Image 1 (tube, helix red, strand yellow):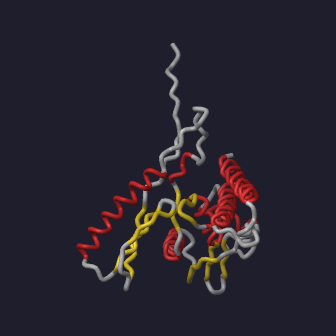
Image 2 (tube, rainbow, N blue to C red):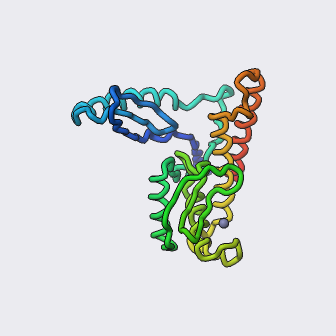
Image 3 (tube, rainbow, N blue to C red):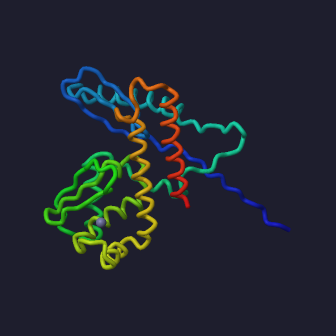
Length: 245
Ligand SMILES: [Zn+2]
C-alpha cells in the first residue's frame, strides 16, 4: 500500500494591517489611509479621548474592509497556481520605516551581541554604493533608506547590522573581520546576497513609485512608460526568484 501523498500549497497571505495613529495638533478632521500593510490614521489632538477612540474604531473598520478587497488572492487565468513568491519563512520580516524603529532594532541587536560603543543611528539615501556604513571614530551608523521597508527579510537585515558592528573591531574586510561576523551570523554568505537583492529591489520599487524626471518624463508616451514599468517588474520578479535559489 502506498502512503497517501500530502501536497502543501503555499499561498502568499496579505500581512495583517498594522496601525499607526498620529495625533496632530491644530487639525480639524480625522483621516485614514493604507500604505502597504500599514494603516495610518491622523486625528486632531484636541478631541476628547472618548471621541478620538470612537472615530479611530470607525476608520479602522472602514480601512480594514477596503484593505481586504485589495488583497483578495488573484485567481490565475489558466487555473494553475502561481509559484509562491516568497520563501516559507517570509513571515520573518521587519517593518522598519522610521529612524526610531531602526534605532530600536540596532541598539537591541548590539546589546545582544558585540556590545560596542555605538552612539547614534541614522537613515541615509545611498542607492548604488553602500547598504549601510559606520564611522567607528564617532560611533555613528548610517543605514540606507533602500535597506529599509515594511517587509525586510529579518535574517538578512540582522546580518547587515552585525556587519557594520563588526567594523568596530576590524576596519577592513579581512578574514578576521568575517570571523567576527560569523560569530553571530554563521550563514552570513547567504544573508549577504539576500540583503543585496533586497536593497536592489527597493531601489527599483521606490524609483517605480517616484519616477525621477530623467527616468519618466511627464509628456513621454504611455507605451514608453509601460515598457519602463514592465522592465522594473521583470527585474523584481528575477530578484525574488534569485533570492529563492
Ligand atoms: Zn563593511
